Length: 469
Image 1 (cartoon, rainbow, N blue to C red):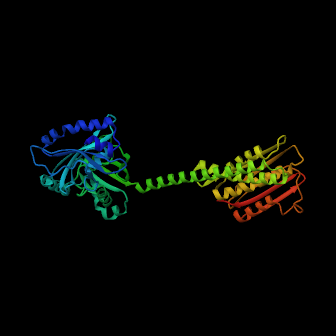
Image 2: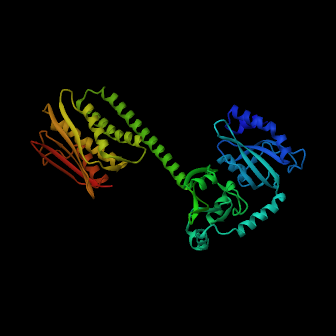
Image 3: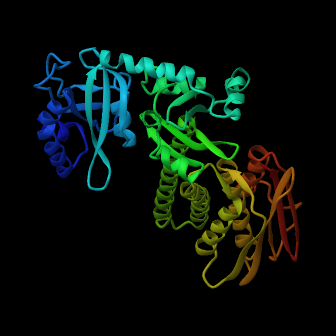
């Protein structure tokens, strides 16, 4: 039965299951030795719920159970000791629990570990709660009558109404005997979430500690320990520090901060980043596919004007694809425009400059981070300006230079495309050219910027601006 349950509900290996089976064979002897019901529980895979995989009732004493509970589930709300030990790998003593038959018992638990010290199960001993009533009362009296650890502790407790209501962290104070003598409202609420039914004041350190650190280590080393622990669905940061008064260590204070929301937001950001990467990757692939189809179609066209129009469209599509390719790599919606224009420069050099011509293109200036929408618009504009320079500025020349200058400003930033080509008459230039219309429309409508064109026989400078992020 234990092997079937473990294989069906857990992620334990065959070796780990064999170890549990060996311990399960000893359960009857253990039950008789302690005169109590004993069990082995294991965590269900991908869950914070445990399952009972083995049990034994004492033959020399009275069992708390009328029937078998093997195969039944153990929830945190009912059995906090068992779940705590499974998750943090530490023993728990004398903690109340509710059985599968709805009876109140006291649980003592110890972890069962594999050869690599990983907790694979928990050994549970249960006793009737009535046997511990006298001891519980004694612990309550101890909590009520314990002398203050130090003047520091006294001051802290006196200021409870003024301080702890404004502290988000859970705070538990232990005396040098490892007994909790103080817990603020945050601590009480946190341990209720963890399934603790009784007042945690008066409980021992070993039953409340959530990290794998011993009380003795904190007291001996006088260190300030910080660790992170996952308990159920909660991600908790725990801090342990010694309390000192007049050069004498009087106890330990435990701070617990619930970082669950922070970790959840981190996971959401990671998932969002992955989703953004995938979206941009697919858009890039689709655009490249369209460009490839247009390229195949253009090879069948003999009309130079139509073929030129196809090539211009392919160039525009690839300029957008470059933006999405880089965004797919980054996984965020913001990108450095200088990186995009550098890639665009390489694409223009390979695909747009005719063979035999020596036209050098360089990108200089500032790095500016923009969102994906603005990056796409800028890439389209610069692509058109580069095409104009290559097609018209150097139509009758074998060599030349084109410079893309990026200038970052406080309110507005600008990009200039400067060439040393033949230039043109800006007054008589055709206003109906598609490339020029695309540039003018995107600068005005998408970037809310201004376009300036200056040209002479020594070259052309086209500058457009856009609002800085």
